[in-house]
Image (cartoon, rainbow, N blue to C red; front, side, top):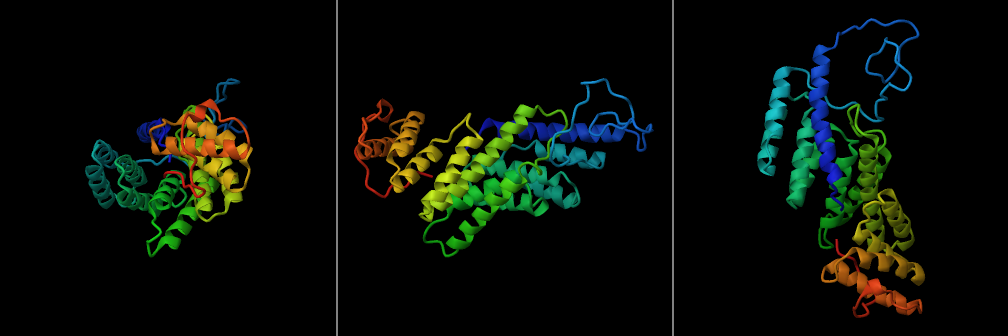
Length: 312
């Protein structure tokens, strides 16, 4: 799963938005006067005429979480200052105990979830992700991250394998449904950052679905979803997704198309890595089967066995 810097950017935006929202709520009058016909939905000052082109439309999605009191906001800032995943989790749990109705709980749990994901702790990532979803079942980022761990970490020997993979599929599908409606972004967020964030989430969701279809030998469906994954975030194609698409095409005897993506996967990877080695072997294989010269990007590599599975 791609972990682009845009996720960190969105965390900073969300944290900043909480501060701005609380301060604005404290200073704004409860019942501002309005004039008939002058209300401008989504503008900073309702009831006051705006100059053409100066209104700042609010981004589509949920309202960002808000602090209700100064003590709540101060406690949130103290909890958010932690950087160690375990300390972050403990602070989030403590905050949730002290402020059980706070909207800010979800931000702290999400921050801890990301920290555990960065530390490659799958079990804790899922645990904290489920806490996010307990507060907001439609959060697309938590849905994608939990689904990704379930899809990647479930073993064939797990007794609950089918249940875990079914849950991963449903979560990824639900994330696709909520990505345009349930991202909480403060007003003033640059549209290009918001769109990049949504594109990354969609790319990961389709990648998860395509991977699960591939594992079920449903290669036609896998091909469609892996294409969608690449198209959703073209600025940063995931080499493993590109390679898996090549393999899905290979499985359908679409060798010229498979060669195109195997070549691209080779160009995106280092030769001495698991993904890079497999990409080059696949590239050589489909070049032979399509009776085309092996592209230079494929480098060297032995012809792989028929049943290849890309690294997770």
